[in-house]
Length: 185
Image (cartoon, rainbow, N blue to C red; front, side, top):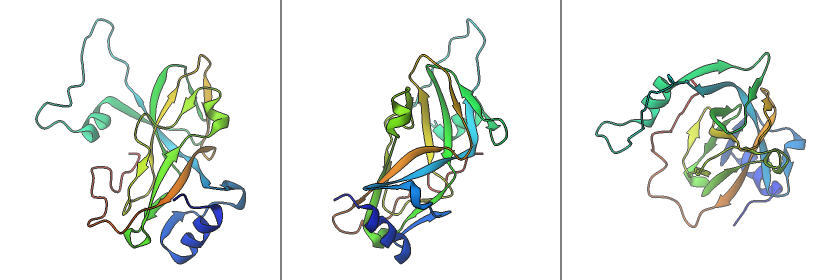
């Protein structure tokens, strides 16, 4: 069951869901709430022409977190924004901190905004789920410009929306995955 704007606001008031800072009134639609882009993105480093390398997630000791740390560069876009070329993937984070308390029996999906999707911008590759019990200072986004034209990204722009869903029962354990507490640096 998807929560309506009224139920999202009630869950925020009761503390079952936390979004900090609280979204402005115009961030709500009938069944979602918009989140804004934070000031830090991570851009993948360019490799030397002729160099062939491949990511192999099956290698013992592989860590996507370490790969991102080593193969991307953090860029502060707070002053001038960032022009995302077509056919390019970067990582970004929401400005808002999120907590979905397991007692609230709520999970969420991060989804793109149709106004951005229509110009080619996607905010997740295949990872929309925000699990019950998730708590982090931001939500990491896999931002891709699928379009042919560059798109300017700016800190504070509405970048995605959260759709909250009530779970059937409480989970035995809250989310404890590798992205718990994720930060942009």
